[in-house]
Length: 131
Image (tube, rainbow, N blue to C red):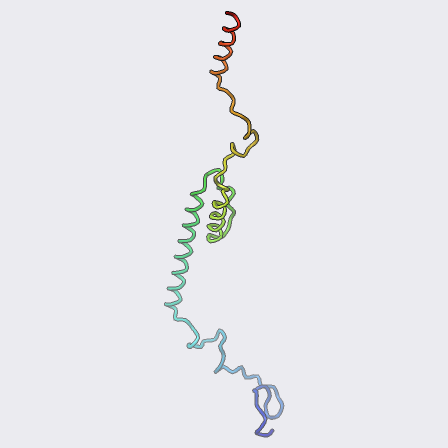
């Protein structure tokens, strides 16, 4: 082989395949100390993440408690961040402001007179007819 040809590490001078994995430049999951995070730093980051997730879960639970009792069954089972987002959107749209009497059948029906009013008006009618 002449010296002008490049050696890309794939073949030896006699044409055999080079199986050297190049341990000096391996950036995989090996024991290369330059590419690893110190255990103490990793544990701090894990603790921070757990604390953030716990705080978010607490916030989502509190947001769900602000929803009226009769509407809590409507809240989907989502991860905490998505649940808070869903609750906020539902509040903006007015989903939790409606009541069954406002939207239910007969909501347009006029209020019926009270029992006392009926008896009194019937009695007054009787008196006016018999005098």
